[in-house]
Amino acid sequence: MRAQRARAESGDHTMNIRLATRPGDLGEVIALHGRLYAEEYAMDQSMEAYCGEGISRFVLDRMEHGEQVGEMWVAEDDGRILGSIAMLAEEGMGRLRWLLLHPDLRGRGAGRKLVDTSMDYARRRGFPGVFLTTISGLDAAHHLYRQAGFELTETVPVHKWGIQTQEQRFDMKFG
Image (tube, rainbow, N blue to C red; front, side, top):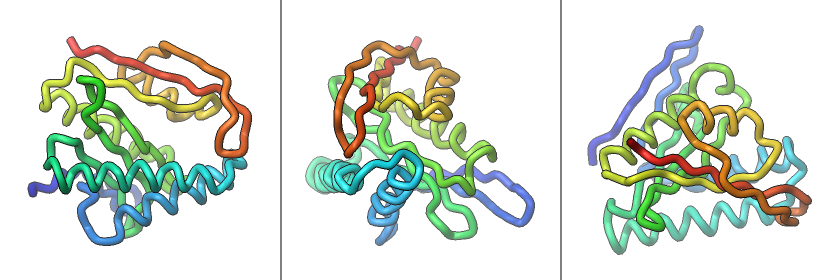
């Protein structure tokens, strides 16, 4: 499988975006979600379990059905996985999932590169558009989504992952 790479130089650090195909990648992405959402948003361990379940299902679906299920990328800095994103085929569209950046990568263009990588993939796949679900309060992520052309289409109050929040759906149509 051909690796897709985007590089950005920043001081002594090199940020690299690549497909999440190496042993250990998925576990690191799941653990990063668990740690950061607990530290930054006081979410409980069920958030990590939710990510683990979804990522596991994605990988098993890929093993059974092939690459048409979607792709996942990680952002590395000096060999450390510090970010992730995925684009899955769902509802006849693309579904953006698991966008996350460690604070060490924030403000360096990594979020934009991850979103651009996944959106380029969605366009190449011929999806008519992309949707995502998220929660309120993730202002930096919402900014990236809006910059990419997403619009907020639904908001529902929920209690999940140990917090009261608003689940939100963003949609974007190509073309």
